[in-house]
Length: 240
Ligand code: F6R
Image (cartoon, rainbow, N blue to C red; front, side):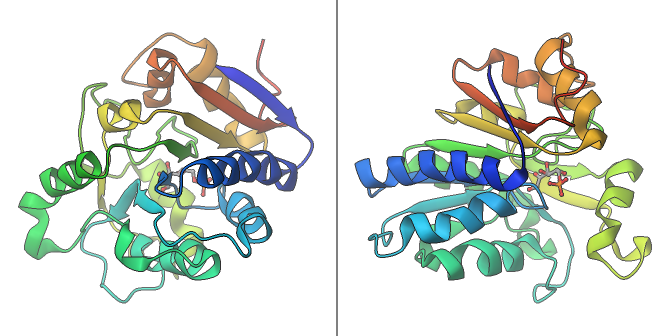
């Protein structure tokens, strides 16, 4: 992987937003893989100025994951987050930006449908990734197969407590999710993994320098030929 160490999350946002804007200028049909959570926020913020006045009406997006069984209108559903933080501020066509369907009604088909939609769009050009403190990417928790495709997973207690800040109490954090698999993520043409803060340092070092293991799902990125890791000093602090 190419490792870029930046001073601040805002600097990381600029670096990655420049790359995404360049892709969209070159190809108006660019397909973006979108992460949620705190990490990608500076990327989406920096994209506002980069894409102002640019025709983004054909840009497609696929979110990494969604909670299962969360109320459809819940403000912390990833459908709502992607709409609020990406689709609306950047002016993307909402019909071209998809989030896995975490509703119980369609859950049996949701994974296969999502894979088919990604394939029909021609695959993801650039996938934005955060990393969990337990080494997950998407919601591929430790033990996830490197060949996995979009499917339902159980969130670890670590992830539920990490994400409790978005909910009133930890009991409100859903227990299950639907996530792109590691195999899905590895099919994207360029992976851009971001991480900020000392809390991510161990996971980042294990992902880049540790052994390939399902117990550190982000280590799967070592199998990909085009990976950029953008970290601040704190998140880079345990890299060799
Ligand atoms: C979010 C996702 C997760 C997060 C990870 C880090 O769509 O797939 O892998 O990227 O949990 O979360 P933050 O950025 O909130 O620290």
